[in-house]
Image (cartoon, rainbow over all chains, first blue to last red):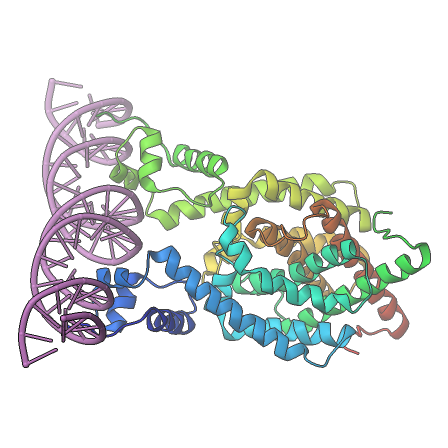
Length: 202
Length: 202
DNA sequence: GCATAATAACTAATGCTGTTAGTTTTGAAA
DNA sequence: TTTCAAAACTAACAGCATTAGTTATTATGC
């Protein structure tokens, strides 16, 4: 009945809080309004639509994720930094399941806005690999490989695709994956040093 | 107005066809009924609910994916088989975007039925790695690593997360990823041979 | 201190989902 | 030809996002 002084930030915060507790990548406007003590359509005084709200939360999640990553690799370089990054990546995904899911569900090939918002997420990995003195094209490839491993792992854990053969623990699998990446990267660097060319196709 | 002799198989087939053309992992019952020339609630004479239909399509997609994989690695072993498998994996995901998305969106930790249906998908990879003479626990780990790379790649391509730094092509990135996996696997095998133990943590 | 304008709440309604209950039609078996 | 189950239907509901139009509150200018 009253103008409660609700702000967009408060709505986003409530949405984030909801996502954090449920582990789901979204909230219904109905649920959100209920939590804020208003009726659903009133939300439209502050947000444009669900997509708009999603973008706000998306931005929030990315900022959080990136700062988490940056903190983890501070004062570290090379393999040590890569390993620390991977651990930070895994721990964030575990601690913020809903937000991670959101980050990995929003963008699409067509959505230029989301892709641009996600850019910092890529830059952290690229700068991580810059230590290795690779050529620019090689970095572009290996950054993809690294992110594929990281996300592929989290994603399939989340889906339950890693709970077969469960005798062996996930942490060890993750360590092996990261080590595999580093071994592969080192092998590539040896080849590059010997031939002066990236030779990954023979 | 008439009993059209519709069967569950026909409904599933139509749903698959719809998913194949749209690239989306699902169809609305309304759209499905419209395509079949009946009213929405009539579908409930054949299916239990949307989840039920989803499972049917899921099963169909898995069968298709698995047979595609098996055909690709027939008469191949070792690295050659691994590479052929990876190519088959990538090509299926590209050619059947909607079905692949469905496969990678249905299961969850809690959904035992879906997890069991997905089992053949894991067995193909496990049998692929059996060639290498690894211990059972090592296979459990490396099978995860391989699938993480494969799905991680497709997933992020799909999300648009690989379209930055696009100067370099995706195919080459994929090749590097598979080679990285093989390099890592070989490195592990050398270690195992030397020490008689899996030593991936030092 | 009071009128005014902007803000932010509201109610009512629409269209899209999936779903259920109850009813009629159809086609095949007795 | 009657009978009965299968498979279609209509009508209705609940939950979702969303829009239009309305009222109440708050802050601003005179």
